[in-house]
Figure: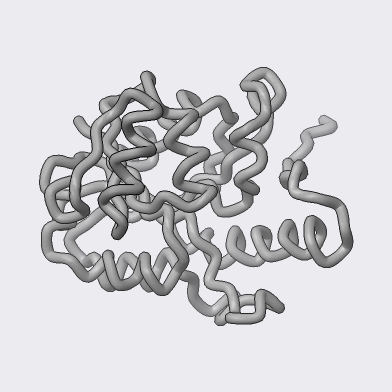
Length: 205
């Protein structure tokens, strides 16, 4: 099963670097030349977006929410596991476009009706991908989805990428995870905590 990462921004690059050699990885982006260059540097495949999706079992939408929603409408995603890592930010990054009543992940699932959407990685800054694996091994990636098999497959990739898994239930949990991602952004940028931070749950029992 090929794992496709669509998007070669900081998150896409970081995720690709962590997953290279851990899965049958394909990198795709709107700039085919840049995607090919990144893939070559990591020793993995690249392909145009439509070709990459056709060969994929799992597709990471490592792009901003608006672009993810656009890609989600492609009929070729039917039957695929689609991983949404976005936070639906306002243009000025001051907050979310919508809050607890719905989520980017749920809107992407509606657009990609035949796919199995899983929410993950939206509370992780790209800088964490550059840290040593042993520094991130206990950092949780919150995972939500309605299909148990899809959640399990994505969870294995989370571990392969050097993070811990925190399952949060069905896709409706994204209405909580996206505000959590916004809180992390506010702490990191607005309050000057930097981008080497990530939220975590602690059990003191």
